[in-house]
Image (cartoon, rainbow over all chains, first blue to last red):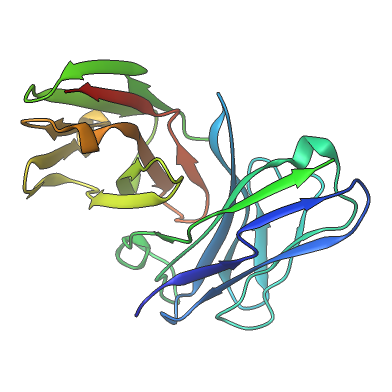
Length: 120
Length: 109
């Protein structure tokens, strides 16, 4: 079954304790992205990756790191979590072919089920 | 970056009523999706519709890319349609993605 898998689904942790949220997709998608959702602020993009070893900042990258060492995985790293990073996080992926261009960008995103992080 | 505005922010309907949700965007896009966020927080993809019209059962969507808006139609609404509906666009470089703030739909029995 084609899917985007996030782990953990729920996590309560404390300020300053490094954590990683994993994201894996089995659809051979080039494009992957992380979002956070906060009440009243909708979903905002944190980082995205057009392909292996290619990552770029979204609208709210502060306090987060990502890596894309292999196509299927795109982990989100919080080096020193703080309470303002308490949120619902989503990972997404889509096809995005090489060479860019409009035709290659016309692909829908597939979302994971979300990860609820609480940082005390 | 691209601005996305959804209207109305909140909508309350009686079961069986029809509704139209709107998504306006500020710049050219070639990638637009409508999502429904269910009570468990999952984002359910309703339509991928960068242009044109699509229908799926009681739901349909139309995007007029040249005029920078998209509409989501829900006919004969049911209580299970309740939730938040989001519009999301990606810029022409297909990297950055922007969501609207959503429309919260409540369907009363």
